[in-house]
Length: 412
Image 1 (cartoon, rainbow, N blue to C red):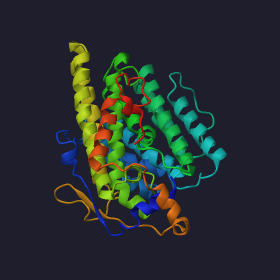
Image 2 (image 1 turned 90 degrees about the vertical axis):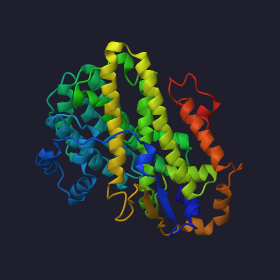
Image 3 (image 1 turned 135 degrees about the horizontal axis):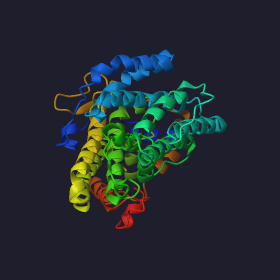
Image 4 (image 1 turned 30 degrees about the horizontal axis):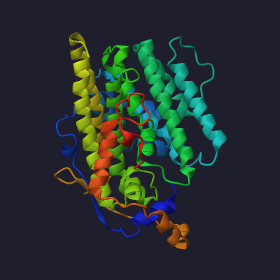
């Protein structure tokens, strides 16, 4: 997103303190579990990391992100070997994504598309139901290290579950590449466009699609993400909860580095809100996703046959485990906060530190200010009501938005 248009939103906020709500107020009755095999996989996990990734920068990044801990909270009841594979997969996302985030592919469309094509090919071939021997391993470890993971996931899956994971994984890869290219956009996207795009590139869908791999839960195809309107909405609500919580907690660091491509600046920009108002609104949006998920869960149970209900409840619990993990992992991650930011009551408090101003803002204050003035100013309460209606009325791009009202396709 264009830096000058967002700089002026924060220019008077140097040193201001923002408050992120506590987890207990966002998802009050979803418990956190930890897999008992966590300690036993550590040595095998780090052997894998050191075999594939030789750069200290990558190893340190993986260490800070604590992929084994993330996997243990994601899948608290998985067997040891499945937990180890999940830890490796979660770690894999970060070196793969590093080539996108570090700017080395910026303004290099041919190299970017080749990176995309090579990764997709590795994923599809490793997950193929008729596996072939890989004749020419890819020289980039960020791509090739997926091969054995894909083979292991394929071996424990079915054609249907492997296809679902392949679809979700390839959607994540493609969306991440598209996001890198969208950095060159000249205008900010709407909040709904941003959330819809981000649903696919935060890896929630791939991790949800691996519930079968970890627990061998057989869900009939008619209740899958692609076929069932309730499951579709539940997956998307979980993805949005992950997006919102990540953006709330990473805001202070992103602003400090001049990165404004996230939810809070967009809420401020489009709705004429102050930073803390936008933060509170984001918390309300996350809690509303939680409430909506609980409602859709009941609707799903009413739809499934009685004999399938215990399996479906176990599946839904696994879905909840994933997002509760995301929240607790984010709140405890040093990447997101410095010492002293996490309070005893669970809230996170951080000061805003601004990057150096860009020349464009200094030389064009009037132009930027004009762009930042909405044609119609609405109150915080009106903004919340509009957003809640959008969340409860359906999903803009989904075929399951049959009951969606006119606001479901509105930008906000």
